[in-house]
Image 1 (cartoon, rainbow, N blue to C red):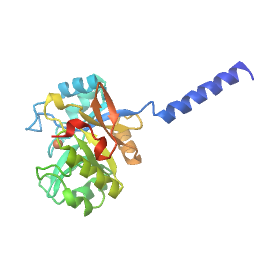
Image 2: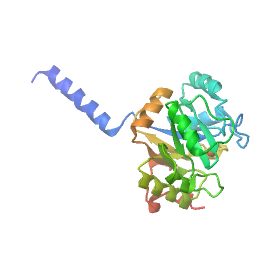
Image 3: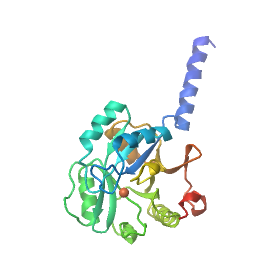
Image 4: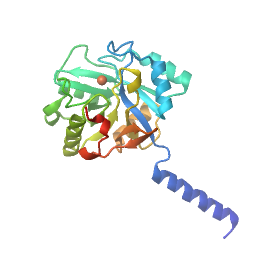
Length: 243
Ligand SMILES: [Fe+2]
């Protein structure tokens, strides 16, 4: 076999292996609050990008409470820093919080979860239940079983107990929905404590939505200087969620 053929075969095998091992995969914190539009946050976008980068995140998502006001600034800042920032929303429906991406319009008042999900779908967006069993009455709880059209469930949330996360994981498994992890950060030390594994690199909102819709996302947590994909069994959830 000629040297050139061997070389081409070698490159082909390498590319195949890279694809198999997901070398272009990345971790994204998919639920975060910036102080301008989330009044309960003390985080600036700059701090979020810096801390996210330090931890090894490939991108961050700003999901302010009932607002997407940060979108233009986030787009500019992402371009300036060459760091992907996706703008979504954490919308407080009548039954609980839902995080959505890929939308332009959202209700200015609280509407039923199903109505919001339908609006997201009509715009080609995606949505997931945020911390469905957190003990602050802001999760969808048993309504997870009633609503139709959710893409996923947040099964690791940086501000939610291990028990509530484990219960969310059980529901995700039962419903066959995508599982995500996110910090839900409002303070600097929480940035990136949890994240979602994306099997492919995403840089634009379109890529983000495409990969999200394809599936293969997984919840992850940051420990000992790197991200680890979380097993969904209660016993495998990281110990620091015991609080
Ligand atoms: Fe949140």
